[in-house]
Length: 178
Image 1: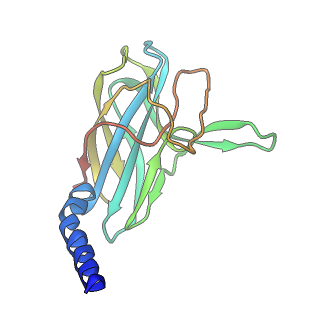
Image 2 (image 1 turned 90 degrees about the vertical axis):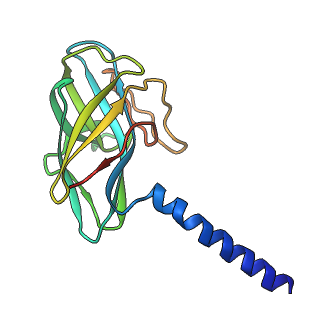
């Protein structure tokens, strides 16, 4: 009777948690944990970090980003060269997001780079960013500047001398693809 009761309690717990899980990861393409880092100076650079979930049956690809807070917005990543030095590189082909998978844009890895800031960005400031996907099209998100954010456990801390860093989780908004 105890085993049967335990199994029933476990089943009830799982069933009751399903609506909550669906809210955390809705169907379709969605973006969350969005934040930016910036030196706060006009003309300097910054970066945006976020998590993309592709809860669809179709592979997609983040191919571009745009925002009026920078002269140029590019998709970047970090790669180690033959001498062990990390280099930041523009990824012109974008980032694949396979069906049913997720892709983190985080410190020390893939990220959205803001080049030539057109205004001062200070902690707590928010600004819109348009992410362009091959399949989902344009997704408008809201980034919040959070320079105090620390990388998650296991994340790499990178300092490029330009005031931008990279991490995985944060606050921000949700975007849904069309």
